[in-house]
Image (tube, rainbow, N blue to C red):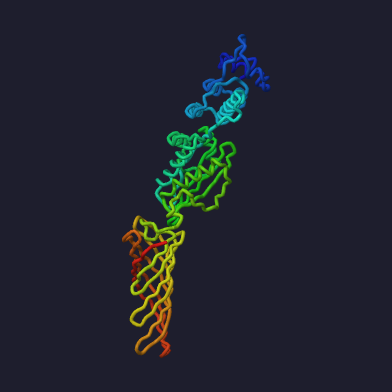
Length: 408
């Protein structure tokens, strides 16, 4: 089908001679813009006419050429672009329409004497994946990021319902997009410039927010950050930090572990969490019958302890390593290993030895900074009597119990 037939059949009001010249190359400037001529007034190209062209069998190249060089009055709102997509208009044509209207808006701003026309960036934020915690956490973090982006006034954020509709059409989930190319493809359909994907990962008592912004135009990750906090309620602060860094154009640094200045002082000082008897970064003193211990919880899921016990002619000094399996409000489950030096002295014997073993147990919060810990496990013990040069060894099952006071 020739350009002349398409024009006469589907685009009444567009001068076909002008369109035929478009097919062979861009027309002069005065053919695209400038004062209208009464004898040959050219009506602007609209969304409906583009749909008609596509349905008539016109190629994308032909339609794009018309979009780029004809007077235009396209509707580039999100709903209008969605309608174009549903009508069978390809992504290349939709992108050409968006580019044309952006170019016209920029030209209009220059003519009005305002060369620094403020433009907002359209962003689509996918629901974040959640690892190690309820999926609601990732959805909530993504929603907070959407609101925070909108609050800056620099970004237009596509509503989650509209995003969900497009993803369902593409048979994708809201949090199922990982590849930048896939994210960019969805962004083109939505008319977005950037697409945000990411995850919230809980490791021990640490929450990591991983966010990547993908350019729809290039399909490349243009900004990425990994921020961490030691409390779930610190995630909104992390979202704020991400948006602030993005808006300022800061360099991506996915390996940096950053703690937001807006986070509560207690988080930065690593005080014990009153909801968790094994709070990250806290020291604790314990009374472990019959003796005492000092414990330190590291930034992750590990903790170590030094202990000393004495009674009935026996002295024990050793170290324990804890690994926290899970934490609920007020409850912590753990496993670990222990190694001890043992010294003993009786009425007729005197000697020393060692013990090593493993254990499993848990801790329960009794008060704001007070917890009860209990564990159980097998211990291999080997003892030697220095007076009679005798030795003995064997395995026994040991129960340990202690009360701990947590502090900085």
